[in-house]
Length: 123
Image (tube, rainbow, N blue to C red; front, top):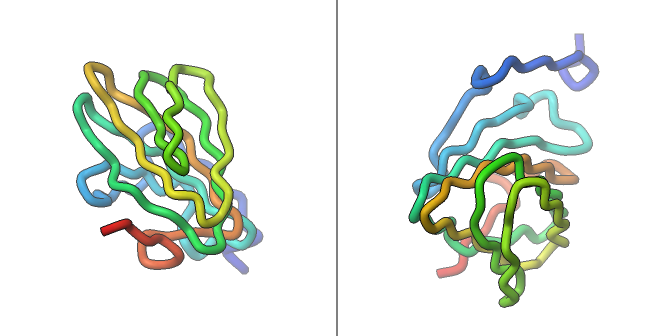
């Protein structure tokens, strides 16, 4: 059966995780199941900085599940707290910073974006 047409159900803390430049990322959808979008949980510890990156094609949606921090989106700082939602259009430089609290984000990309596809880091 085509994996892009299968139901995907993930129990809490059961998604495969990887480290992306020091940030813990849970891949909620297997790469082979992503046809229209990709889905991640981004978990930052206190006092972490997610390096500035952008996507040439992918549009992103973020929802803050828990914690606090800040997002720098095209040079403008936004304060992130539980329940915040925001959109990051393609070509938008974005960076995340935590201070004394952790930050837990739900992240969707359309079309799908992966660490080895349409992810670019600023030098």
